[in-house]
Image (tube, rainbow, N blue to C red; front, top):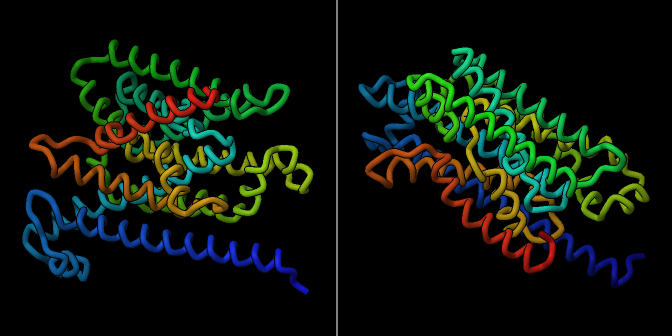
Length: 343
């Protein structure tokens, strides 16, 4: 027989669950609206009716090329990359219980970037090889950070500090490569480093989407374990969770998401850093916000790309706009942590 306390807790659970579903639906609708705007807006504005006719297979002069060949891959890449960055950033922050524990704060994104820049500037490569190099670089750097952190006893704080140090080293390597490279090769590398959706091809989308589905499903399957991990390592072990296995799966899937997203779009700054806190504030306490973080990431990328393409006389890569949005939040977070004595 249920006690009054059980009924209260169950009602609270239902309330949280309804709020999470409502927020996810709203975020999904916003993502779809921004996706339609990405397809409609540009040098030439097309109505949703024209866009729909293009996807029905009708050949329309100018519209078919602009919508299907140029804007459609850009929209898909932005959406998938945003979801990947958002889920990965939220995973890191929840596992390590620190808002600074974002892949672009602890060297993983910089590792992928350094590897890609080396291929572009030193080896003169492009296309799929650069993407593969970025993925390999991100995975290698992440493995190195984790191995250095695992010595003795795993510590989220130690991982963040080691990651920040590794990020500084990777950024120094990137700067050195840019200084030594031919001036004719630097613009291409800089465009890639700024985080851009320009030049994304439709052929790159299917493998990227497959990685998102496979790696992104892991935190959704492990939702219960993530909630337990938030209680702390001692409680997690007491409740019978295989903490090293769960942590390894979550961190591994997050690194794969970040590396693949960086390989396709370049390092779009602060999306992984911002998505989790925004999503968790929206869904409320007691929820992992995995889906909400992914949708928030997609919204940030699509909205920032629209702003960069439409709001100024000069077109800016999406990473420039997300950097403008994220930098004030980082300063605010550091000030807040310093006031609380956590810095």
